[in-house]
Image (cartoon, rainbow, N blue to C red; front, top):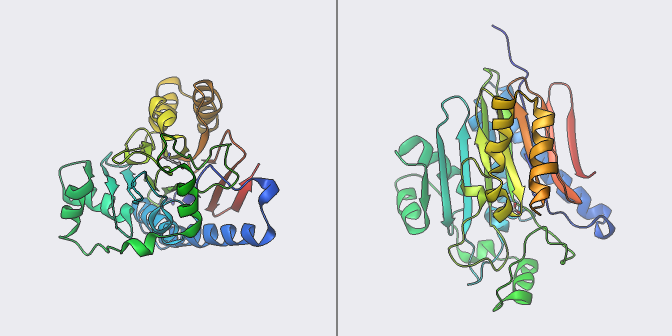
Length: 310
Ligand code: ASP
């Protein structure tokens, strides 16, 4: 039996600390956190686990780090709460699970996975999602767990206004980021997942691309697995994750050309900024972005990559 060219790619958000503000210490912290998550996912694949399991394992690590805007590090919404979105998709079955505007969940990606496996629905939100979570061993955390002084200060600056702060906004000097992962396992199955706190001061109840299948997350064994990050409202309008897959399926493009058209052309043309991590069924990996940086990493049998800027 042939073993596929298994591997994993992850991101910690397309909005990065500006290069001019990055210190060697911060850079090491980010890279170490990325490496830890990458390894958690890669270990799964090496041990014969599924791409779905690898994606969840990598995202859990990223959600547990306060450095990234997901799980523990989720930003504040306009009410000073942490409302989180997450989704996951299995490229083999085309089944998907997602949660939106959930609060106090330690690992939203795990609840999204439960929605996939244990409900007939794709997307549960808010209180309904929390009620659904109670039948499983899903961990909840207090509001203090999600408190971070930097994010609180960031929110205070725009609180009470109609503005919201994208992690990538060029106006602010320091950025945070959504997290995501894509993987190809030894059996040749693809999976993709994404998790986020959204944007600082976003409206109560605002749901972004990260919760939505085909927009922030998509996987199909026929084509590719995609996890997006960036200005959510634009990624939604560009239907970015499915757009990449469609370019491969209908236009016959390879992964590299498909992601470039989706990010560098289509998303850029409508004024969106961001990027994505992508893998195709042959194990090729692409991690394009149209902004200054994107926390990203990938690993397969041939190489390990951990990068922030161009
Ligand atoms: N796309 C995410 C959202 O709009 C934000 C991000 O990727 O940083 O919720």
